Image (cartoon, rainbow, N blue to C red; front, side):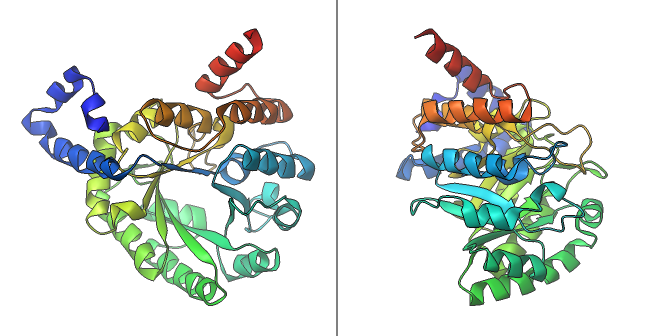
Length: 333
C-alpha cells in the first residue's frame, strides 16, 4: 500500500493529538488503493486552461490540442464550455470545437454547462456528457454565477433533470472547497452539503476544487473526510490549483480518491480569484502517480510534447516541471 511509502519522519510527525484526525483519514483514504492501482485523469486544459487566456486562441489550435490530448491516452477531456460569450469570449466557438474534433471511442469529451440555454447548445453540438459547477462559498457563488448556493443547486437540478432525460451523463464541480478569495477559510460542512446535493440530484462524480490553491495536505484531508461521510469516496475527484506549490502534495495526500483533474502544461486560473495560478500540470500529476505505482494509461512522451506545443502556441513558458525535465532528457538522447 502507498501509505507504507510515506517517509518514516512524516508518519512519526502525524502521531500527536493535533494530527490524529488527519491520520485516521489518511489510513482510510490510502486503503482504497488496495483494490487496484488505476487512477483516472480528467484533462481540463482545453476548457479551464484556455478560458482566461487574454489572446484569442485560434479555433484550429483548440481542435489540434484536443486531438493531441486524445492521442496521449487521456480518458476524459473537458473540451468546451457553453457559457455566455459575453462573460467568457474565449469559449464562444465551443460548438465548432465539439463538432470538428476527432472523437475516439475510448475518450469522453465533456463540456461545462451553466443553464438550460447552455444545455440546449451542448445537445445540438453532440455533447454526451456535461459538467455543472457550484461553490461552497456564498460570496463566490454570487460573484461567479450571480446567485446563492441554494439557488444554484435549484437551478442546476433543472439542468440535470433535462440532461438525464436526453441521456447525458453529468459531473459536478464544487469550487472553493478549502478557501475563498472573499471569505477566507471555508467550512468543510458546507462543502459536504453542496457535494451531497449534487450527488443526490444525479451527478455521477463530484470534483472538489481548491480554486485559489490555498489547500495543504492537512486541510485537504480534513475536508475530504467530511465530504466522504456524505458522498461515497469512489464518486469523488480532486481539482487543485498550484498557487502555493501544494497541489502535488495534496494529490499525494488524497491518493485514495481515484480521479484527478489536471491541465496540460499547468494552464488556467480563475478570474474571480486574484493571484491564483494555474491548475496543476497534467505532466506533473502523471509523473507522481506513475512514480508511486499507479497506472494512468497515458503516454508521457506524447503528453510533454503536447504541453510544449500548446505553450509555444500561447507564447508562454512551459509550466510543467516534470515536462521540462523529460523534454531535456529527450532532446539529449
